[in-house]
Length: 174
Ligand SMILES: [Zn+2]
Image (cartoon, rainbow, N blue to C red):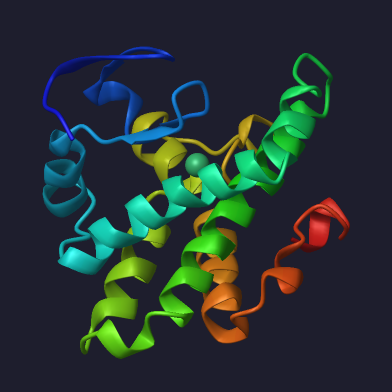
């Protein structure tokens, strides 16, 4: 956790990048000002909104260990790379939901709603309409708000890693 700038094996982290996972040093980096924005600009306050963000990034660590991230990185430069990126990101949301499923006994009233509100606010369509005033689906890298909430929820309901294959179904039905 840091504020402003911080050196990582993936370059210098800073607030504009948002939270990220660095496969080179296998660490999750979060500029705490992102949490301020989540609460103030994105209206997604609460400890579980923050937990969801961390769980999503740890999801990327799991994908790294399973070799999934590497397969997606190999597609970089291809015209459909963004679609692979969306699949990878929605799977990280699924894994965050999966984590919540297995920690149900720690959850408090309103926690799931906090995570869903965060997912709703950081979908590509929500971010694009805030920053650009229009939505360009071909530029999506993380999935829409609806998709992000859906995959988090699927992980939460299922609790099984096998049900989180975002790569096998048609892109249009994710
Ligand atoms: Zn991600």
